[in-house]
Amino acid sequence: MFQRRLLRPLFLFVSTIVVVALCIVSFIRLPYETRAYVFKQGPITSCTFEKDIPNIVHLVYILKDPIQGDFPLQFSQFLSIYALSKRWQPDAIYLHTNAEADGGSNGKHIKMLEHKSDFARVKAVHDFGGIYVDLDVHALQDINPVHEAGYRAVVGRQLGGDLQSGSFMSEKGGRLVKEWMERMHEVYDGRWITHSNKLLTTVGEELVNTGPCEVLIMGRDAWAPGGWVRDDTERLYGEHDDVESNIAGLKQGDSLPEHDDMDGYDRPEWAFDYSCTYLLHAFSLEKPRDGVKHNRITPKYVLERRSNFGRAVYSIAKELYDKGIITIDETL
Image (cartoon, rainbow, N blue to C red; front, side, top):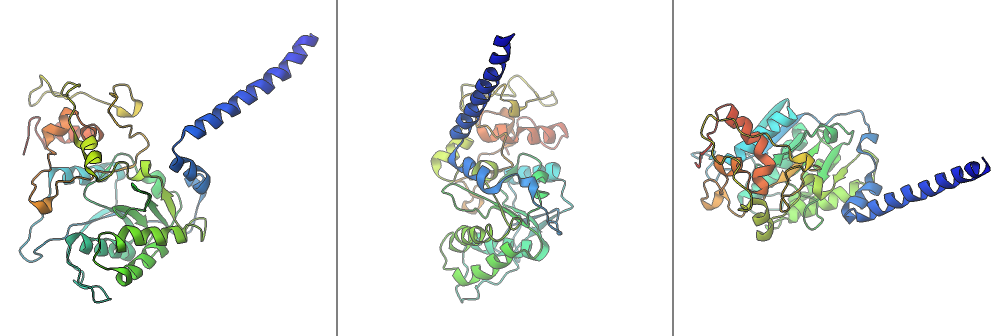
């Protein structure tokens, strides 16, 4: 009996030490960015304030010729719009096009379509509130846990640590978008990201410490995994011959296989784990502005599931196939 009384507290003590040690080891093995996020932000559900970020999605498509131009949407862009419509259930989706002045308030002429888009997107979210996403951003999960977390604005990191302007959300007239909108006219110098990512990083990191609910900065894995250099795009879009095509032996009208990549059951070694990713910013080196019609992304390419991109958006493409919107061997 005495030995039992002695051994019980000893067992509890040793068990506690083991559990704490395992927690420390697990924490150490997290990427630095994730560890920093755990300590810096805390639970995203712990913040509340009186206003809401509207459940509105903003898209921007700037035309070279706003008078005679058309909107030649690629299949991948249609996938993006369909996914956010299905997974987020927004109250409205607004498509903004050329409406801003060609010159900034500092007299610098805005030449690039991408830069015109930068100014238009910030003004749209400032004026209406809501969520902005680039047309190469794909919603992999419901955004509501972030959208309804109680912050006035939400932004995310990208490769290199800057905040990225390809997806962000804010209340109407929020401090983040207001200061960003006003200052981007002052700093615009014609360079690629001076007025966008660089300025957003400055403003966001200034505001994140001004109040508990002002800005939530999401980690890169959650908001923009991958990157824009060729190695990154090849890892995302490159097809792998070590797996059989998902549609091998199938013909139009046959049922497509169900897949759940979140559990990792049928995930090959080369496949990315997107289970913690809300938004996939699918950078591509093949742009519509360069005359590319479908940047290699076709219904057949996605349905085959032999690339990381195909696996990530397969469930959306499968739904389009099931509804008869795309065909099994469609190559555009």
